[in-house]
Length: 133
Image (cartoon, rainbow, N blue to C red):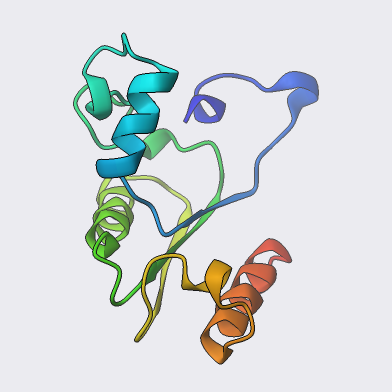
């Protein structure tokens, strides 16, 4: 977010970003209170919840392309879908894509790297990084 409102060293530009299987609450809560126990707003602090109260507008994302990856059976799937929708509705002028893998659960591509679905997701991410549609 800050890259969209602050200059980066040497006029560096971030062309793309990806969000893979976003999550919050639960384990992240325990981690967050350890990392930043005095965070105003706690787990809803904009540093961990980019759509929470007080967060910068998503319209100022500091990149021109965004890929949001979710898995159909992930109980946290809606977090990614909501983030994708919030970016689309924010007035951000970049290109945003939601990539959903059917029949899979959270972070499946990390735990089962040899499956066709994992290969498909990694291939999509590689294409995104290489600026291919």
